[in-house]
Image (cartoon, rainbow, N blue to C red; front, side):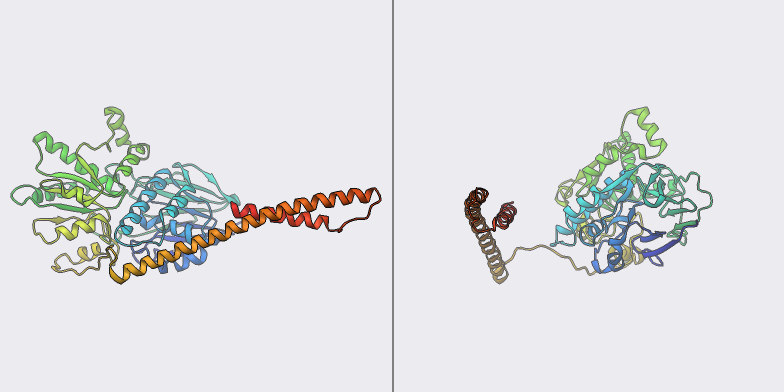
Length: 471
């Protein structure tokens, strides 16, 4: 019998917005990606909030915020409890994306939309699948991830019923990249439904990779070498395209060292930079055939960079002498280290900002891309500052009131526990008397109170309640 299929875009349709869709196959509802943007505004998740408890499974295609940024919030606050499926790199790198996003926001403000515990809970429950691995879910449906290119572990999803083939294919790459092969689909010729995007359809400036690489190298050298000796800032994501750019620049530095010591430093700046590179070094099987062959021939992991200096704070970067090329998160310049360096370096004409991808509308990065000649920019920058005066006094009074309330509650619990212990002793004595009277009755003596069973039940309930209080 033909399946009933219903597709509902929650976000990511008719606009450049995060990707999130609901696919209903008969009585099962699948969430296809769970993206959010760098603002992390809960009011933008109204449709997801109304549907989250009804979802039967989540399929994640890529590890960046646009594809899974709302997952920790949905798991922690919207009642999303269903199984979640992704490839291993999407699971690992996605967690790095969310850690970095939280730390970047929480560094300058009291960010409480989601917590690191929410991130951990969300990704602990992700079922990691291999490419081409068929996995049976409820209702006789099987799901299979296929290689998408674009980002490490990126997946196209094949959802198959007895009569229907559905293909979810977003952000896939037709061409090989420096570290990834192009997309691969096996055995799916005419799907019943294909869900895809056309993000780059109207973007006509599609140069060959060699031309783009050469232009980037030339520009970096012009800015950093004498006599200009400026700095270059590349705002990049946490654990996606940054790997490709880092591979390119590390190779460029290697060639420069062969010709003589380069005049400038190469830096990777992110809260999770070291962890991301550790994961990348362990995920070569998910990368291109060329990367794997080079590793087998040379026994040198391509992500064991020789010339990339890993930093975890702006202060570390500024201590490096001379011109610098810094790959910093985040790519939208909404927050994070990239924004901090942009603020420090933007006033000097010697410095340069290079964007390697288009950011979302409404971000500072997109504003600079669309209006490259603007000379003055106004920014609202949240900052944590020490409390002073009346604010400090009110905060201390509030903390004292909370501590006093906690002490009072603990005292009440301890008193209740002591009272229950006394009641238990009395009940034990009453039980012994009742048992004696029952024995006497069996011998012909009159029964005492006749409430022995009820007394035992009350004593048992008091003991259970006392135990729960102490627990």
